[in-house]
Amino acid sequence: MIFETLLSQMPYLVHGLTVAIGLLVCLLSLGLALGLVLAILEVYGHWTLRLVCVLFERVFRGIPAIVLLLLFYYGVTDYIEMGSFTAAVLALGLRSAAYQSQIFRGAFLSVPNGQMMAARAMGMNKLQAIRDIIIPQALRMSIGPWTNEFSSELKATSLAYVIGVVELTRQAKYIISNTQGNILVVFGVVALMYFVVNRAGNWALYRLENRLSLPGFEHRGDA
Amino acid sequence: MLLRVENIHKSYGAAEILKGVSFDMAPGQSKVIMGPSGTGKSTLLRCINHLTPPDKGRIFVDGEELTAKNLNTMRQKVAFVFQDFNLFTHLRTVENVAIGPRKLRGFGKKAALDLAYKELERVGLSDRADAYPAELSGGQQQRASIARALAMEPKLILFDEPTSALDPELTGEVVSVMNKLASEGMTMLVVSHEIGFARKAADEIIFMEGGKIIEQGPPSQIFNAPQQDRTRAFLNVIEHGDDA
Image (tube, rainbow over all chains, first blue to last red; front, side, top):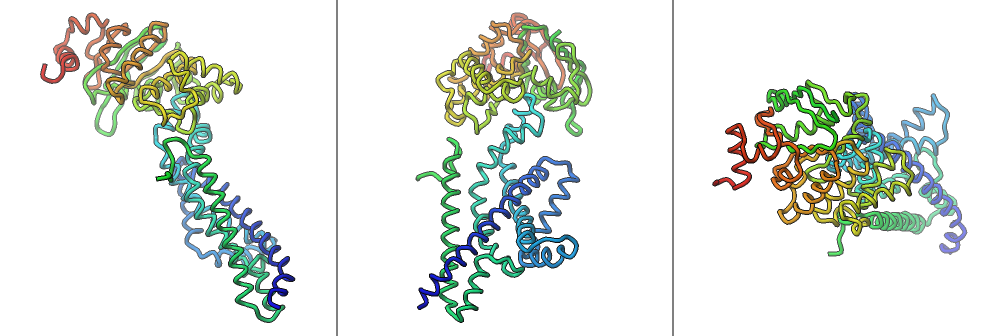
């Protein structure tokens, strides 16, 4: 009985999962692009730019995700028209940018000074040196800490529920309302889905980290 | 003159490191800068390509003055070899050598790699082309960084204590590459206490102390008949050790 319900409702859950993953990909991409820019400006920028970046990062790291979602959906949509999905991408994506900027900032700072100096000494300008020498090294070091960000943002997509994005958690709520009950089983399946995506993502990132690791810079040895 | 260094001054806070240093270099010359530590030798070298911009004074390369505007093009003519190599850790040896021609000199990928292999052969590292810097010995890393400098086809190479980070057994292979370059007519300005190179390959020794040049001349004169007591005392120490 309960399995029949589950089976018949499975397409909704799968659809909810694809929305959640879509939201995750969008917000992480926004966070990656903006976080990288913020980190570069924080480390190499003029002090005024650095100030702006630090301010942005403090604000977005200092406000609960759910409050950001409500602010963007109910606050900003009064002035700029956007759907709940877009609002969720912006709220969670900007917040992720703040967190990711700190991952990248740490990675930039851990690239030895001599690398920038050698690049500049051969005639590269600062931008070329950052692009061709510093970023390839810093990104490699960022993958480990970035898996954390992946995990927390996957789970944070469920908060988009509150502004009406029909993602996995909200689909579960619909199913429970429509079938009167089955709370434990439905949320159990949903929990399992989040868990599996989380593990799969972490596994893929771990593989990537290993594939890109350089001799002499392995993070996790076999020992 | 290929290089003209004119009245260079540099201070860090209240400490005046360089107190007006001037000298010239003709094409094909090798000069070695010696002197006690803290004397401003490395600072002088860094001032020449503005890695450390001087407070006062001017640098001319090939008749053109080095300014903030032409910095990046001028640096392509003045290569720099670091004490601690600073090879790009994410690139294989051959890519380290190819990246300059590729990104700065407009070479295609194939042409840049061909040139890189050629320069690696020049420093005797062809067999290590595919290794990452962390897989090379110190001496090999320094030779690779010399190949990286050569690939820019510079007018002048600045060497900042190129053997100081190396074990005595490894300095030999770097010095012999430097000797070879000098004999091929490369213009080289070397901060080093490597007597072997100074005697054999240098056209002139510049002896510095306290931010100034106190004596300069051909190695035969400096090593055999130094004019200044200070030079004599210093050379005594580096040739025979502290208790000489």
